[in-house]
Length: 154
Image (cartoon, rainbow, N blue to C red; front, side, top):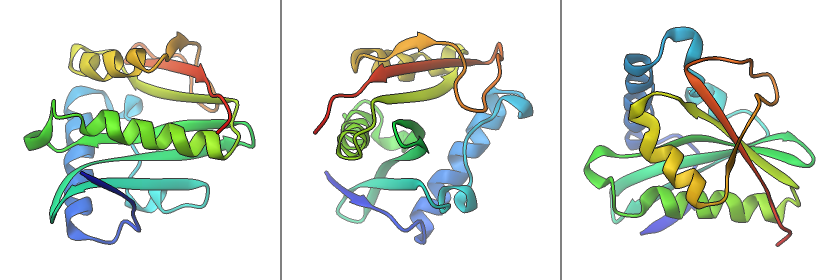
C-alpha cells in the first residue's frame, strides 16, 4: 500500500468521493451530511491523501485545519472492495502523523451515529478518540457523534 498527498484531479478519486457522498446521503438526512465534495476538499487548509496498490485506489482521508492548534479528520473512505484490509487504519495513522508535524494539540472528527458507522467509530476509539460535544461550527445532531483526542508532538 502506498499513501500519497493527492491533488484530487484523477477520475478514480472523483468516483470514490461521489460514492462516498451518495452513501452518506442514503444513510443520513441532508442536514446531517457533513462530507466534503471535491471543491471543498481543494480549499486551503485541507490536506488530502489517497492509498493505492498499483493503479488501484484503496481509500482516502483528509486533515482540515480548524485553527493553529486543532485539526479535523475529514473524508475518510475505504473503497468497498478493500474494506477490512487496514486501509482506513493506514490513512488515519498518516493524518495523525501530519497533525503532530503541524503541532496540533487536538484532533477531532464528526461521524454518523447510525449503525452503519459503527465500524468507523470502533476504529477511532482504537486510536484513542473519545466522545465529545460538537466542535467548530457543528451543532448537536441526533445523526452525528463527535470525537476528539490529544495529539503529542512529532
